[in-house]
Image 1 (tube, rainbow, N blue to C red):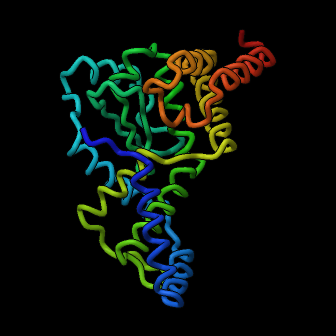
Image 2 (image 1 turned 135 degrees about the vertical axis):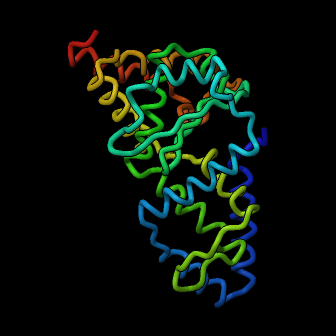
Amino acid sequence: MKRFSTPILVLCFTAATFVAQAQGGLGQAILEGLGSITLSDAQVAEYSRQGVQQMDAQSPVAGPNDPYTQRLNRIVARHRTISGIPVNYKVYLVKDVNAFAAGDGSVRVFKGLMDIMTDGELIAVIGHEMGHVVNHDTRDAMKSSLRRAALRDGLASTNGVLGRLSRSQLAGLADGLYGAKFSRKQETEADDYSYGFLKSHGYSVLALATSFEKLAKLGGGGTLEVLSSHPDSQKRAARVRDRARRDGLR
């Protein structure tokens, strides 16, 4: 499987910034045009779908009869739609401890994550990832990725109209889907969404806390990138436990 990583986007952004600076007034005009790009949720979903298709094509996807697929299907049987968003699930047969959700409702769970998490903890992680979609964090990350691609490859004119994405540009978009970084506020809000999701569906909210605690024990070795993007998993677990105690759920 290709390793999708944030540094690729950072390098692209740096190069694009250099080009824009070198072009002077033209570069500034392009930047202003890109800043005006507006994307509807439907457009974000379509670009996300294309990006995930690219990732699926480059990844070892578990087949329908694979034990990992069967386990995930059993876990998510009640959650083919989340907050009105149709969700499709697949397992990547790689050892990375990771998962992500895209704006089209695609959820990809990695084998390494499934190997260390209970069913309840996997639901908690999926709830967190879908929280980013429901809260439009993934939409905003997609816009940033598309703006960088547009500046780098000329995908947009100064009126902010996006052109058609090539296969290589879709690969860059897939990098953005996989390596999206969220703010502390966005992570907290996604935690809260997962907590509410677990509570409303009758799951133990403490599964969210124990998932954080497992990630904390992993340290720097292949931790779940999105959930550990702020290295305070223990504090986040404690926050969940405090809230559960206030709610009388522990």
